[in-house]
Image (cartoon, rainbow, N blue to C red; front, side, top):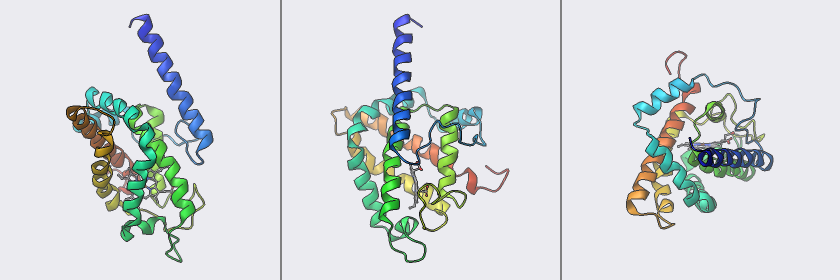
Length: 218
Ligand code: HEM
């Protein structure tokens, strides 16, 4: 590696590190990279094998990273669309609603929304290291009875049912596509970024599914 490449990579890593640290202070419950997180029950080589199975390539990593600059100032608008979908789908809104009254919980929705915005940036960073794996495990747990509601002290239903996790991959990635095209990327670049996002979201949903699956079957 040439010296300038090393400096560039080090500087980029520094920016990523500090943006994660800043996010941790600003976003309650955001814990990517925190040593308190449990070690994921799947390994870096399990991740590599899964990526191989999904035809997840270096080109996808580049496309995800390219998407960061495209999406960074659109996260609020994207979340308006995603939250609009959940809010208008009673079968999904129940997971953000008080378990007793059935009323949507605005504080819970708002707290998760902040971390969801950061998740868009983290997904685009495409780091795929051990910290990222541990954070995926934590996000999975937060959708299940193990940890749902705990981060925000919510009084909602105890788990998101598994089938909806996989199902939501489609509206999430379909509605993202127009945002990828909003900043002047060519049609071909938009296709590549979109394909990479479909893989990246599905990859995460697969990792998040681990706590739902019978022991030994994941
Ligand atoms: C492609 C599918 C999905 C994606 C990408 C996704 C993404 C996320 C993200 C990024 C968070 C925040 C994690 C954190 O930082 O704490 C989260 C939490 C949450 N999601 Fe999902 N999610 C998906 C499926 C679903 C579905 C189908 C529901 C049902 C409405 C749902 C309901 C929730 C709830 C209730 C939380 C808060 C959990 C808690 O109490 O900590 N998610 N999701």
